[in-house]
Image 1 (cartoon, rainbow, N blue to C red):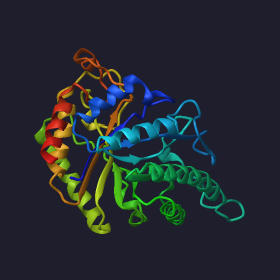
Image 2: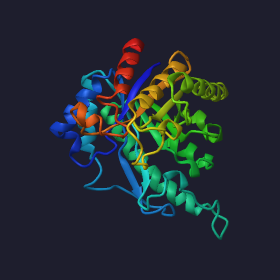
Image 3: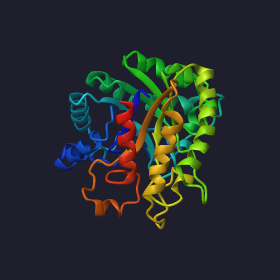
Length: 323
């Protein structure tokens, strides 16, 4: 398994990454044995119908923040994937962004305008990835409503390859892998692997491994179709009861704390996939830019973080074995 990774600091704001607390947080992250990190700066459009994308100046992490973490990671021998993520300010999931395939004159003007804006930002960050030596660049995250625009995506990826010499990935959402007809244009077939492998009363490692084994065979078919490695660009599970049945969930705040289920989710995935040569690895979701520092705080945290929880030891054990 080539990529033993984690996404870091999606919650970051301008200046956060360079704070003392963030440096301590990353030191704890590196201790898990990661050999890759993924950085996901956020872009934004006003709503899912908007065709103009913008920076969140003063809110999102700056280029200086990104450059500091990239330099630090490389100094530690850790590789970096830069993955700009587009959000919609109306709170609707980015996968819902889509437009009619033609306007009243039969032209593709809506899509042309949106891809012009989206492409400008992707090329901006691709140049940053090239200049800072990032080993991977992800051209999109869960853009399900846009994936049928094959010509536009191929043209965008070709323009990025003219600026960036590293490996490219694309991050679809689980269940949509066979719908991306231009997957051959990237080097890693990425997906948000929030597969519901737990179910009521079936949260053991063995139960989840059996469910992951079924997912593995579906992923094998995708690999065989494209002859490219599969990469879980996002994967994770909160430390809350029943979250393995809805690992994408971040909204239910009334669920009981459950580190065992989270740890089993991690362990079962790696049991099923780690030995597969076509499986590139995982970027677990996600490690906060600043992290709690005591076991007592960890016991009150029902989020995706694994620091000082049972899943952290599971991951350390696996990464040590795989390293």
